[in-house]
Amino acid sequence: MGVASKGESGSLSPQLSQIPHKPMGSLRVVLVEDHTLMRAGIRALLQKLADVEVVGEADNGPDAVSLVSTTRPDLILLDITLPEMNGLEVAERVARDFAPTRTIILSMHTDAVYVRKALQAGASGYIVKDAGPQELEAAIRAVMGGETYLSPGVKGPPAQFLSNDPTEDPLKRLTRRQRETLELMAQGFGTRAIAERLNVSVKTVEFHRAELMNRLEIHDVPGLVRFAIRAGLVSSEH
Image (cartoon, rainbow, N blue to C red; front, top):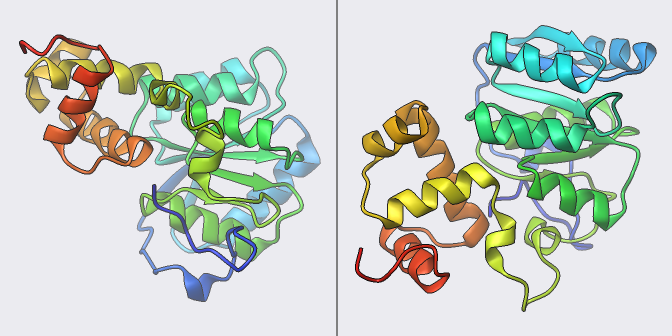
Protein backbone atom coordinates (compact mmCIF):
# COMPACT_ATOMS: atom_id res chain seq x y z
CA MET A 1 0.00 0.00 0.00
CA GLY A 2 1.39 3.39 -0.90
CA VAL A 3 2.21 5.94 1.76
CA ALA A 4 3.19 9.57 1.53
CA SER A 5 6.47 9.36 3.41
CA LYS A 6 7.73 7.94 6.64
CA GLY A 7 9.86 9.34 9.41
CA GLU A 8 11.97 7.50 11.96
CA SER A 9 9.00 6.99 14.28
CA GLY A 10 7.01 5.25 11.56
CA SER A 11 4.45 8.04 11.25
CA LEU A 12 3.95 9.97 8.05
CA SER A 13 5.68 13.30 7.61
CA PRO A 14 3.69 16.33 6.43
CA GLN A 15 6.71 17.93 4.76
CA LEU A 16 5.73 18.78 1.18
CA SER A 17 9.30 18.41 -0.04
CA GLN A 18 9.15 14.68 0.78
CA ILE A 19 6.05 14.07 -1.32
CA PRO A 20 6.23 13.82 -5.11
CA HIS A 21 4.45 16.81 -6.58
CA LYS A 22 1.31 15.86 -8.47
CA PRO A 23 -0.52 18.71 -10.22
CA MET A 24 -4.02 18.67 -8.86
CA GLY A 25 -5.62 20.32 -11.88
CA SER A 26 -9.17 21.34 -11.15
CA LEU A 27 -9.67 19.27 -8.00
CA ARG A 28 -13.30 19.23 -6.93
CA VAL A 29 -13.83 18.79 -3.19
CA VAL A 30 -16.88 18.23 -0.98
CA LEU A 31 -16.41 19.34 2.64
CA VAL A 32 -18.41 17.65 5.40
CA GLU A 33 -18.17 19.00 8.96
CA ASP A 34 -21.00 19.63 11.42
CA HIS A 35 -19.31 22.49 13.29
CA THR A 36 -19.83 25.71 11.36
CA LEU A 37 -16.66 27.49 12.52
CA MET A 38 -14.48 24.44 11.91
CA ARG A 39 -15.97 24.03 8.44
CA ALA A 40 -15.34 27.69 7.65
CA GLY A 41 -11.72 27.35 8.74
CA ILE A 42 -11.11 24.29 6.57
CA ARG A 43 -12.85 25.97 3.62
CA ALA A 44 -10.56 28.97 4.01
CA LEU A 45 -7.51 26.71 3.90
CA LEU A 46 -8.79 24.90 0.81
CA GLN A 47 -9.45 28.18 -0.98
CA LYS A 48 -5.77 29.06 -0.60
CA LEU A 49 -4.72 25.94 -2.51
CA ALA A 50 -4.25 26.42 -6.23
CA ASP A 51 -6.82 24.74 -8.46
CA VAL A 52 -8.89 23.35 -5.59
CA GLU A 53 -12.61 24.05 -5.80
CA VAL A 54 -15.07 23.36 -2.98
CA VAL A 55 -18.17 22.22 -4.89
CA GLY A 56 -20.37 21.52 -1.87
CA GLU A 57 -20.63 21.48 1.91
CA ALA A 58 -22.71 19.42 4.31
CA ASP A 59 -23.15 19.15 8.07
CA ASN A 60 -24.64 15.64 8.28
CA GLY A 61 -24.21 12.20 6.77
CA PRO A 62 -27.26 11.92 4.48
CA ASP A 63 -26.62 15.34 2.94
CA ALA A 64 -22.99 14.33 2.38
CA VAL A 65 -24.02 11.23 0.43
CA SER A 66 -26.51 13.27 -1.59
CA LEU A 67 -23.85 15.88 -2.42
CA VAL A 68 -21.37 13.25 -3.57
CA SER A 69 -24.08 11.67 -5.72
CA THR A 70 -24.96 14.94 -7.46
CA THR A 71 -21.53 16.60 -7.73
CA ARG A 72 -19.28 13.52 -8.16
CA PRO A 73 -16.23 15.23 -6.61
CA ASP A 74 -12.66 13.99 -6.81
CA LEU A 75 -12.35 14.09 -3.03
CA ILE A 76 -14.50 14.30 0.08
CA LEU A 77 -13.08 15.71 3.32
CA LEU A 78 -15.19 14.04 5.95
CA ASP A 79 -15.65 14.54 9.69
CA ILE A 80 -15.87 11.23 11.51
CA THR A 81 -18.55 12.41 13.96
CA LEU A 82 -21.71 13.49 12.16
CA PRO A 83 -25.44 13.52 12.97
CA GLU A 84 -27.82 10.99 11.38
CA MET A 85 -25.06 8.99 9.64
CA ASN A 86 -21.48 9.00 10.89
CA GLY A 87 -18.42 9.60 8.76
CA LEU A 88 -17.45 5.93 8.65
CA GLU A 89 -20.84 5.02 7.17
CA VAL A 90 -20.52 7.81 4.63
CA ALA A 91 -17.00 6.69 3.70
CA GLU A 92 -18.24 3.15 3.11
CA ARG A 93 -21.07 4.40 0.88
CA VAL A 94 -18.65 6.55 -1.11
CA ALA A 95 -16.19 3.67 -1.58
CA ARG A 96 -18.98 1.33 -2.63
CA ASP A 97 -21.09 3.54 -4.87
CA PHE A 98 -19.08 6.58 -5.94
CA ALA A 99 -15.57 5.47 -6.81
CA PRO A 100 -13.19 6.91 -7.88
CA THR A 101 -14.10 9.67 -5.40
CA ARG A 102 -11.51 9.42 -2.62
CA THR A 103 -12.09 10.12 1.06
CA ILE A 104 -9.97 11.78 3.72
CA ILE A 105 -11.31 11.45 7.26
CA LEU A 106 -11.01 14.42 9.63
CA SER A 107 -10.96 13.45 13.30
CA MET A 108 -9.93 14.46 16.81
CA HIS A 109 -9.03 10.82 17.54
CA THR A 110 -5.59 9.26 17.07
CA ASP A 111 -6.61 5.89 18.56
CA ALA A 112 -5.78 2.92 16.36
CA VAL A 113 -9.36 1.67 16.48
CA TYR A 114 -10.66 4.80 14.71
CA VAL A 115 -7.90 4.74 12.10
CA ARG A 116 -8.46 1.05 11.40
CA LYS A 117 -12.20 1.50 10.98
CA ALA A 118 -11.67 4.48 8.66
CA LEU A 119 -9.33 2.55 6.34
CA GLN A 120 -11.56 -0.50 6.41
CA ALA A 121 -14.49 1.72 5.43
CA GLY A 122 -12.58 2.77 2.32
CA ALA A 123 -10.92 6.04 3.35
CA SER A 124 -7.59 6.87 1.71
CA GLY A 125 -6.45 9.36 4.33
CA TYR A 126 -6.81 10.20 8.01
CA ILE A 127 -6.00 13.68 9.36
CA VAL A 128 -6.26 14.88 12.95
CA LYS A 129 -8.04 18.20 13.27
CA ASP A 130 -5.12 20.05 14.83
CA ALA A 131 -3.12 19.53 11.63
CA GLY A 132 -1.63 22.58 9.95
CA PRO A 133 -2.21 23.93 6.42
CA GLN A 134 0.89 22.19 5.03
CA GLU A 135 -0.33 18.82 6.22
CA LEU A 136 -3.75 19.33 4.66
CA GLU A 137 -2.14 20.00 1.27
CA ALA A 138 0.29 17.11 1.75
CA ALA A 139 -2.57 14.73 2.50
CA ILE A 140 -4.56 15.86 -0.53
CA ARG A 141 -1.59 15.48 -2.87
CA ALA A 142 -0.73 12.05 -1.48
CA VAL A 143 -4.27 10.68 -1.64
CA MET A 144 -4.95 12.03 -5.11
CA GLY A 145 -1.66 10.45 -6.15
CA GLY A 146 -2.99 7.04 -5.17
CA GLU A 147 -1.29 6.84 -1.78
CA THR A 148 -2.64 6.41 1.74
CA TYR A 149 -1.97 9.29 4.14
CA LEU A 150 -1.97 9.17 7.94
CA SER A 151 -1.30 12.14 10.21
CA PRO A 152 2.05 12.11 12.03
CA GLY A 153 0.20 11.58 15.32
CA VAL A 154 -0.94 8.19 14.06
CA LYS A 155 1.81 5.65 14.76
CA GLY A 156 2.58 2.88 12.29
CA PRO A 157 2.10 2.10 8.59
CA PRO A 158 -1.38 1.92 7.02
CA ALA A 159 -1.24 -1.88 6.65
CA GLN A 160 -0.98 -2.19 10.44
CA PHE A 161 -4.36 -0.52 10.81
CA LEU A 162 -6.03 -2.72 8.25
CA SER A 163 -5.05 -5.74 10.32
CA ASN A 164 -2.90 -6.03 13.43
CA ASP A 165 -3.50 -9.77 13.63
CA PRO A 166 -1.57 -11.93 11.13
CA THR A 167 -4.19 -14.67 11.48
CA GLU A 168 -7.06 -12.34 10.55
CA ASP A 169 -8.89 -13.01 7.29
CA PRO A 170 -7.41 -10.59 4.70
CA LEU A 171 -10.88 -10.36 3.10
CA LYS A 172 -11.79 -8.13 6.05
CA ARG A 173 -9.51 -5.50 4.54
CA LEU A 174 -11.88 -5.13 1.58
CA THR A 175 -15.00 -3.06 1.18
CA ARG A 176 -18.08 -4.83 -0.13
CA ARG A 177 -17.65 -3.40 -3.62
CA GLN A 178 -13.99 -4.40 -3.73
CA ARG A 179 -14.96 -7.94 -2.78
CA GLU A 180 -17.66 -8.05 -5.49
CA THR A 181 -15.12 -6.86 -8.04
CA LEU A 182 -12.63 -9.51 -6.94
CA GLU A 183 -15.22 -12.28 -7.19
CA LEU A 184 -16.12 -11.29 -10.75
CA MET A 185 -12.46 -11.02 -11.74
CA ALA A 186 -11.87 -14.53 -10.40
CA GLN A 187 -14.86 -15.79 -12.37
CA GLY A 188 -13.15 -14.65 -15.55
CA PHE A 189 -15.06 -11.45 -16.29
CA GLY A 190 -13.13 -8.65 -17.98
CA THR A 191 -13.19 -5.02 -16.93
CA ARG A 192 -16.06 -3.99 -19.22
CA ALA A 193 -18.16 -7.03 -18.27
CA ILE A 194 -17.63 -6.33 -14.57
CA ALA A 195 -18.67 -2.71 -15.12
CA GLU A 196 -21.88 -3.86 -16.79
CA ARG A 197 -22.71 -6.37 -14.06
CA LEU A 198 -22.10 -3.88 -11.26
CA ASN A 199 -23.70 -1.01 -13.20
CA VAL A 200 -20.64 1.19 -12.83
CA SER A 201 -18.13 2.72 -15.24
CA VAL A 202 -14.99 1.01 -16.54
CA LYS A 203 -12.97 3.67 -14.72
CA THR A 204 -14.64 2.67 -11.46
CA VAL A 205 -13.75 -1.00 -11.97
CA GLU A 206 -10.15 -0.02 -12.67
CA PHE A 207 -10.15 2.03 -9.45
CA HIS A 208 -11.42 -0.93 -7.40
CA ARG A 209 -8.84 -3.23 -9.00
CA ALA A 210 -6.04 -0.83 -8.00
CA GLU A 211 -7.41 -0.66 -4.45
CA LEU A 212 -7.51 -4.47 -4.30
CA MET A 213 -3.85 -4.63 -5.24
CA ASN A 214 -2.97 -2.04 -2.59
CA ARG A 215 -4.95 -3.62 0.22
CA LEU A 216 -3.96 -7.22 -0.50
CA GLU A 217 -0.41 -6.31 -1.56
CA ILE A 218 -0.87 -8.38 -4.72
CA HIS A 219 0.21 -6.47 -7.79
CA ASP A 220 -1.07 -8.44 -10.78
CA VAL A 221 -4.44 -9.80 -11.88
CA PRO A 222 -3.42 -13.50 -11.92
CA GLY A 223 -2.28 -13.11 -8.33
CA LEU A 224 -5.63 -11.62 -7.36
CA VAL A 225 -7.41 -14.54 -9.04
CA ARG A 226 -5.26 -17.08 -7.18
CA PHE A 227 -5.98 -15.28 -3.92
CA ALA A 228 -9.74 -15.35 -4.59
CA ILE A 229 -9.61 -19.10 -5.26
CA ARG A 230 -7.58 -19.78 -2.11
CA ALA A 231 -10.00 -17.61 -0.12
CA GLY A 232 -12.93 -19.68 -1.40
CA LEU A 233 -14.63 -16.85 -3.27
CA VAL A 234 -14.85 -19.02 -6.39
CA SER A 235 -14.05 -22.61 -7.26
CA SER A 236 -10.78 -23.51 -8.97
CA GLU A 237 -12.76 -24.57 -12.03
CA HIS A 238 -13.21 -20.93 -13.12
